[in-house]
Length: 405
Image 1 (tube, rainbow, N blue to C red):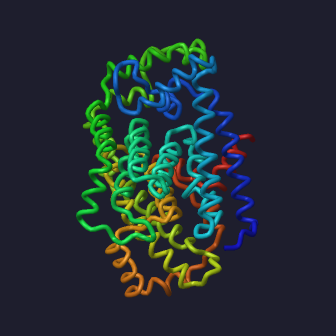
Image 2: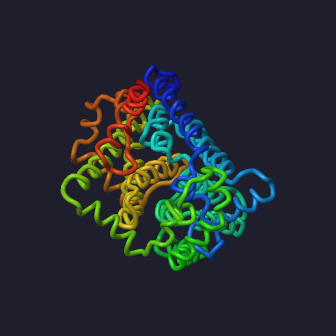
Image 3: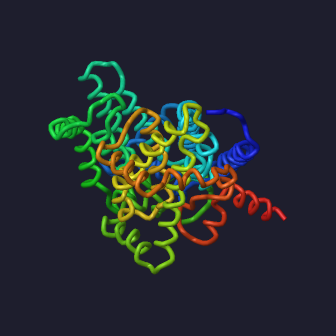
């Protein structure tokens, strides 16, 4: 595809850099009540608990180096974001235009919603590591060991990995691979058994109020360095406090949003549908190999998106960070296609039939693929009218400039 820098792409890149810089400045002051920072600092001070591996490693590194732990978190979070963004821009642009990658649907989301300093990009990089190891020329035994090791580390960092990554590693096939039979799928499930064991462990040892208190107490010196004199830091807050939530509380939060009336569920359904349409619309745009190849890519990407949406669907009941779930959904789907993974054959065939019978090809041909859509479309983390209005690249920065006056 053409790599010409269009005015809309230049504007999106400038606004993205502005959002990233603003978040770096803001992140320095994030502390005790920050979900972004505290999610990284969950550790094993109170015993084994979900999401505790990065915090344990950061505590060791901070003690050994003398670097303040929150600075290590910020550097790590932004490093993961930068590596992932550069990988997409370098490897995915033959099928997915750069304007889509830097938009709020893909790599713009963490920047515009202050979630670069979270484990989301780390998890996606670990999925990329698993896909790269699986496609390598190493021995079978080494590939299995590396894939399970990386997957286990990802699950011990954040259990969401088991939804957007593990099913795809089992069910999706490579480009040059025959559709796996039941026997092959059974073998793949058995091969991923160590990763499944890790998921069972973090599900069972999900946390208690006592563990949350112990983790918070272990970081009291850090909280006081970040916000000296602030009261109430002895009580756990944000992501650390969430360790004490029961599974029933988590389900209740997600269920409340889905059952709180007409507005929120419909708003989020529309958000996912519009994101889905935009990804399919921009897929293969400007491909030099012809419209037939571009349409084939649209069919394959649509099948991956549908499968991935099914795999992440339990997250909608387990938590209400729907914007982050959308980011996992789209980014992992683009990554899977870019690395040569394909959805089950029957799903691809079904999508191709729908495209043919419903005249989707003619419909897509009539829809203008305009970059300017992406300047005015944003994905909120949680639903509120203000959060939605401030989610797009243009509106976010207009509101920021307005606040200066």
